[in-house]
Length: 369
Image (cartoon, rainbow, N blue to C red; front, side):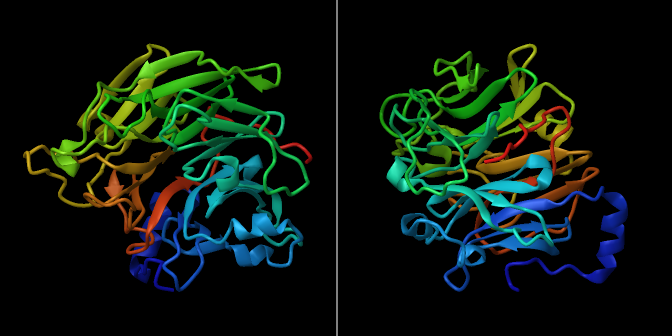
């Protein structure tokens, strides 16, 4: 199919020998000839498992929830429960999907809710929390309802009431659970990222305490100084630099934060940020921008608009939107410092991740719903 990258047979043995057997999970947007889909593939792009709304066409659920799957996007998808399930942002819904190939219940919804009717119309990320809770990020520009937290159950309900709401962090784009410190990390902004007032990328951490999330940040860090995005969008723009993705590093107490303009490394122990080419060389050796990223002001932003990054066992992948565009059109794969053939070249997508647990960053156990 045209959305899968064709790779010549002669490349496959070399790829297989160089890389551990770790798969990739990616959401591919609809191009109006096929539905948006979640694909789990090997690093050569061979699909091992796919999911679309057609896979639950015969499953009983509220009509509103089914209707919320009728969009074009598949924004985020993550490995949970030992790989036996995935959590996804699919069209206008947040879903927990069974991933047990060969099982009669494979691909069934375990939990789901509509985003738009819950005030989460523009959502870029979600994260499983302990006690069968699900955190959903809100990319709105307001100061309220930044993160919604739901108690998951076996009852499929389109508009469940959130158990908690975290406020005062607009444009939340990414969430990461930190089991070691019992924290939920969130990447967003300190003020609305569009407007005349200054805004900067922000990294907050919320403490998980006695089964609930403390709604006041336990930690709050400015990722960078306020930066108006004139290089990419022109002198009249009202857009300010904001966060895009957040990912932990294997066996390290460190996080990578990507923004509209740059890639940042956050050291949790020292509470410090570093950024720039040195970070890319250390954790993304072989990194190449997807195109020329120089503005009319002559400023070069090679690591701008990285919508997702993921690192594991000497391998890295990233998605980057073409200059001045919104959606990436390929997944870039690096193995032992060498660029590999792209995945899904020419397809519109957003985030892509390694389909495995990151060592040192265990996911919560999913209990019975």
